Length: 350
Image (cartoon, rainbow, N blue to C red):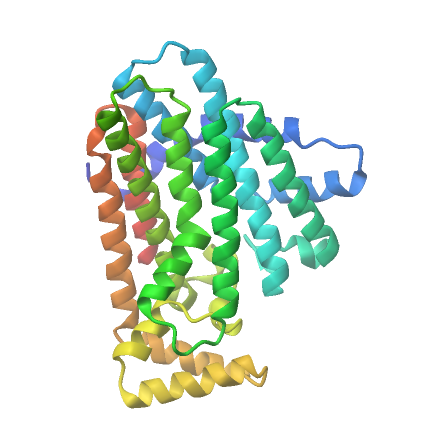
């Protein structure tokens, strides 16, 4: 399934375009209100764009399953519900970003000022709440109790992940296992759930064992891709490009977030590396750090093998995601898209 990067990107660009248009139409049609401030903020958010990766994964997984098994009788209803759920997933993701930016006091996202920077913290939080509630209102229209259960659990898990991350700010004792739990909850869970919804929405007529195989493989694809995606972001926080990332290098570090590269050095680095990290993180937590401290820590990570380790872990997660797709017909374009998303995500590590 490996192709030249330009071929994969062109394939995804063409395929994404038609589906993104449907997602955006549903989002716009469901977010109109009589409150001018809500409408203004929503238009600001939607116009900011974004990859829409989670809803696209849901769509491609669901349509690949639909084309692979062809054992459903309500194809048109299923297709309508697929796009509705894709929009729901995007609204939930956007709500989490609004709340995250307030908590992190972020001023830049996707190269634009954050919603809280433009409109203030209170409007950003309240519109985030509005997006959550509207997402669940749309979800009810799909009329599937199991789908509601999955998304309710997902929003709880994401919130738990954000709290886990918050209480581990500046925690020099955090280990790799704890960190993997954090990134599963705050990032990978929504990927995993998007793929689970892709199975549920198809209303498959399988025996239990076959159904569970499909469900577990779909979940694993989302979980491992989500973990890879977060580890790539960890790598980019030290070695990325601010112009393409839409935020400054070292943003997570400046907030005292101890991500995979630092955790690796705290466990396996030299005594000098550990001492330097400890001193800088303590200054960040005490709000005494200056740019020279941040730059010194970034250089320390870049000059070590921590980024290579983080990259290797991201690639491992991506390969696990791809290996979970064996249950799908690899000749249909939606399965190809799922493979290509893994590969193009890893290409950000260059």
